Length: 103
Figure 1: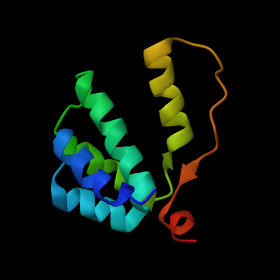
Figure 2: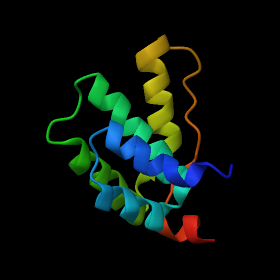
Figure 3: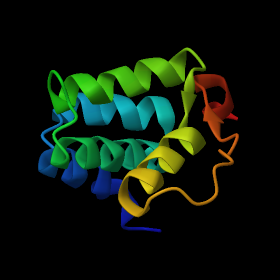
């Protein structure tokens, strides 16, 4: 999508994520995954589930990805359950790490 490049910055602004954090996430994870992480952060923010700040939450997602600990399939399944109830409980193995997003 040609318009996706600016979406991370727009999503970050709406979700109260600092522009420096959004830029770092894009550089580290790639634009698409950074946008997805910003949307996940925004969903947690809207539900009052962020303890510190949205910026700190996003930084933690990037750190987890860098350490190979970010499982977006599990996160998305959890968000689906939170919104729609149970259903299919098999989590995707969409684990994101810095190494896999650079290849």
